[in-house]
Image (cartoon, rainbow, N blue to C red; front, side, top):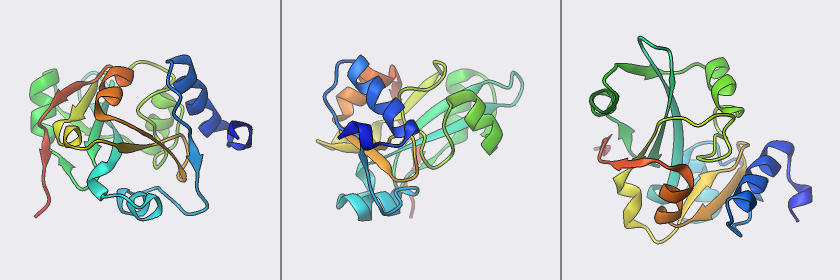
Amino acid sequence: MSNDLSPSAQKVQATLQKLGYNHQVIEHEETTRTAEDAAATIGCDVGQIVKSLIFKTKNSGKAILVIASGPNRVDEKIIRNEIGEKIGRADADFVRSQTGFAIGGIPPIGLVQSLPTFIDEALLQYDEIWAAAGTPNAVFSMTPNELVKMSGGKVIQFTKVPK
């Protein structure tokens, strides 16, 4: 089954296996690019969707991985307080160079380098969550504890819940 995956999704599948997980990457015909699209395609709550967002520090120009629950928005001030530097959204070229993946398919694992990672504590309320797996229509499921373990991220409350 995994031989039918696109090269980027195959890279995520290989990372899962290397880390000792039996989770299967699934590529859908429908897009899973946005949290809403992913939830509709998978048939889960939008809160169960893992958004892997790349920010760039303002002074040092380093990449930061922020993993948020689907409907939530990142409060950049909280991340700034954690790392001691202002952050801003990264452009597509920076994201690809720092992660090896394009925006819309960034997985929380298998990046070309290890990045400081922060995980939205809102994800911990679910039994199962779904993350992008390298392409805008590839996903895999896991538990929140597995996400924390496989990403090495720090769990904090950093999101603004939409009104």
